[in-house]
Amino acid sequence: MNNKEKLLKEEILRMSGVNPVKCMRCGKCSGTCPAYDEMEYHPHQFVSMVESGDIEPLLESKSLYRCLTCFACVDRCPRNVEPAKLVEAVRLLAVRKQGANHLKPEDVAAVLDDDTPQQLLVSAFRKYAK
Amino acid sequence: MKVSYFPGCTLKNKAVMLDEYARRSAEALGVTLEEIENWQCCGGVFTTSKDEVATKLSSVRALKDAALKGQPLVTVCSACHNVIKQTNYAMLTDPEFASKVNRYMAEEPYNGETQVLHYLELLRDTVGFDAVKEKVVNSLKGKKIAAYYGCLLLRPAGVMQMDDPENPRIMEDLIRALGAEPVVFANRNECCGGYVTVESPALAARKSADVADNAKAAGADMIITACPLCRYNLIKNGSELPVVYFTELLAEALGVKEDTNE
Image (tube, each protein chain N blue to C red):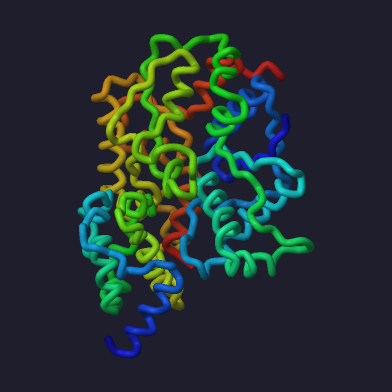
């Protein structure tokens, strides 16, 4: 792990409060993840890749925007590792960069219909934009 | 009794009847929902990162307003409940976070004193399902109802502390109190696809169809939910069963579904 990777890892652990060393590699988080099929990197890989400092591929991955924040991986982890909190921290680091918002106001018109609840839009912006 | 009430953005717009039926039913049960003045949107989803402070201030302001009145804070929307309860838990258990938040608060600080209740908890723990049962005037006998929890009502369970996250019963018990028959189905605590419907409509469509198909296969006539986004996703993605807010059923059973105040 080079110095840049080390700093990035420390920042993610501080933001998330997660200790990836607690993971015993059982894979239950990924087994229960409803977005598994659409993820390039799965919840258990977020845990192991953050631990090893291999974070750049995660920052670039669409997997960040497939996580549903449903907390299934959090509640079903036998070691209380809380993988969703790592995904959230990495996603925040990605969208906090200047001009890196994943969802922009001009994108919204295409997804609106007469029944779209306000909850959908505020939730999507909170997750995908800063 | 009076409780503080946080309706939330969607209950003022696309889910206006979720709110209206909740208020009428509460009155019929002897509880007044006192809407917090100048409440602001909770943001829809809780941000777990510890360095996110500004995104949680609207929830803390609502919590503090209730604390100053000495009332519990009640929400009906699953999302508002999840965000506000998780925010309150952070205020109570993370002193560093609470200290950062309190720098934005005028006058006295807030440190997680308010009790946050979902409307279902109000019915179960304050009113009591037995008391609800006594007030039923139109029994829903014969209806087979699938209670869809989704993710926001139950998880993370250590913070929500509302029900068993893998085998919940609070909505089934309400259905029984209203005279109907609850239908337990496997996908009742799985995600509908949530906000990812913006990012990947196909993923949300699969998740929602799994839930609706599973409820139908279990023999239900209808699905109830507390979440406007779950309802939207299930209907949009072709649920063959009607998807209604739990407050609508409650209002129907209590005989207050039609507005008599006009």
